[in-house]
Image (tube, rainbow, N blue to C red; front, side, top):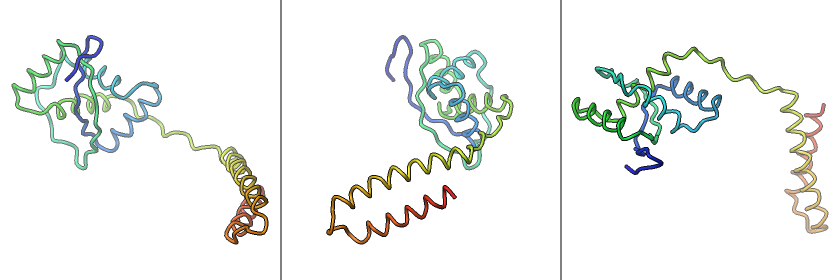
Length: 164
């Protein structure tokens, strides 16, 4: 445990179901916030109302290493709670974060990438690669390896297919 800007840094882990992990990942991306900061805020908000009991860990729980940034007061409350119940910090933090995620509305799946944009990006990348390979072939002259010529031919055929 170290002290950071008035807050204690505690290393632990989250034990979440795959669905909760995906929901947490979506939340981190949509809020553009660091995972440790988000989890620390969730835990700090629930410090005054720690759960009376913990349920069983989710089957096939996903383990996520995490840091918590807690004030001295919050750290003492959590430490007292875990010692009184002889439970691990990871279980408590997982319960708090899992309960929080369960209260959130279901997030819609991320929109599928636009196929025309993906194709345009693929074409741009293939053209760039083709240009580099052709320059390499031209520089090698008569010593051009056979694999390079066949790779260039395959790349040209793929470009025709993508542009098709």
